[in-house]
Image 1 (cartoon, rainbow, N blue to C red):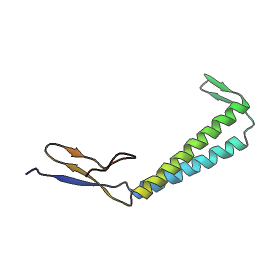
Image 2 (image 1 turned 90 degrees about the vertical axis):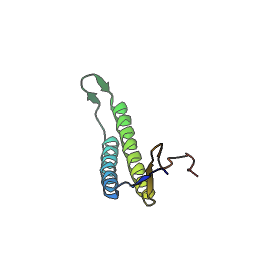
Image 3 (image 1 turned 135 degrees about the vertical axis):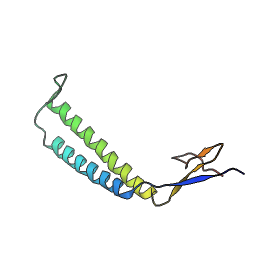
Length: 104
């Protein structure tokens, strides 16, 4: 008989909530910066962006921050159902991710 060791795999909701707050503030600040941009942008004296290019750059960064909010929210929603990591002498079973099939 194989010995099984089981661990509960559940993200901490406080960490996810903090990430949501952080990315929300970043998204709002970057969106505000993009909306009121009237200057170009120089990054490390290597990349020089015009006013319109800098505005697009800020909007893209704002969108990435918004995606961080979405992933944080999905993490909180998915953390309601605990998942388990199971270690045996011959295998490691992980919880299904995304469109992966569930183990029988």
